[in-house]
Length: 455
Image 1 (cartoon, helix red, strand yellow):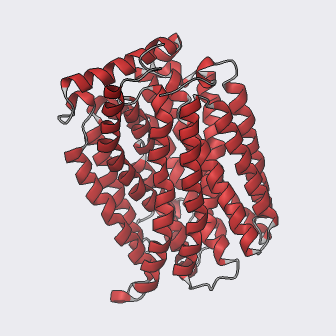
Image 2: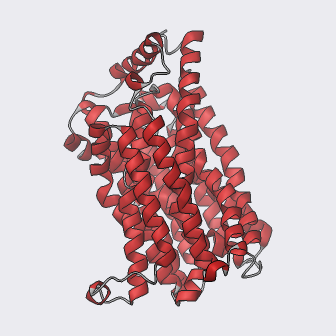
Image 3: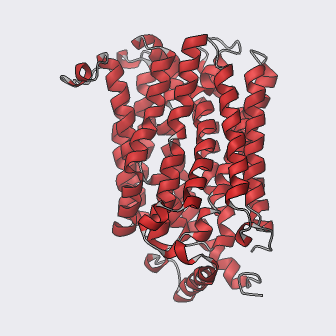
């Protein structure tokens, strides 16, 4: 057995130290990133009425974030590899904080002739433009962190690391939902501004602060970590080097080789199916809960009820990620989780306005999709290396996150056309089930995805 199969106490202590130093900072960054990405779901409860927008306008605007994200994802990740994680991640966070704050005056920004050029009403154009620019600003953040973690953790340890990092999604929703409701409740009317305007301003400030913190506190890699001894750097280097013989030769190729890989494209589809479910439900969850009979202006109550599905999901995701690392099994953990997501979406489509069944369905969806997405990243990082990893991870994430556009947009269009989102939820369920099947096909016969003893 190799050292990775039988880790020494010193190795365990080294990686625990790395985890304690890096994961809390990255975890906090992702919390504030996700808040700025999805707080539009709460703002919608006031904003669409105030500005006279339909569900279709909101759904398209919420999702267009991911078009900007898609277009700039790969270049952003390649630049991160070139200029270093510290500078690039700080730049991303500070830029998106500024754009997010601008939503507070979305109806007051002068765009000149651009709205007419696109045939859109001025405030609608402004909403679409800012959501697109927010995606451009944030492009590269998540895949950059995924790539960054591969500089520190060998493959056998990444399931837990990714799951810990992605727990920020659940924390952002558990904390962010009541916080957003509280801001909209208490600041509504302050200084003549509606609650939804204050929401964007207040929740952009942590992103700005964390961007500055990253610039001063995040090392570009183990070689730049002053808090590691030379011996500890050697432990990390040897663990990462031990992974190399298990990666395919093609995985060490160029960025173009990664982008042309059929497996990379298959995994991009799997991530797409996950993102459709995650963001379709996430951007609409406050509205879904509001329509269960909660008062239309009871924003804090809506936020507190929104905590329930995400709180359950946080526990489930951690358990699944830890079990996947302990067994070394990846493909079935992802596939079964996506199957559970499909079941939850199907249940949500038929529960109507029944409160308890709807909250149960939302908890199943949130748990399934987050367990799948966190464990998923242990698959591509097992066979991608170097420049191929930078390009391949970004490509999977950018293609996959287009699902973040189609999910909310589909629900918005169906709700506008039919007055109900049940048909859209059924389509999302079918897509999640397809992702489960493709996962099994894309990883079939790969020994790195099967059961083995992990550290």
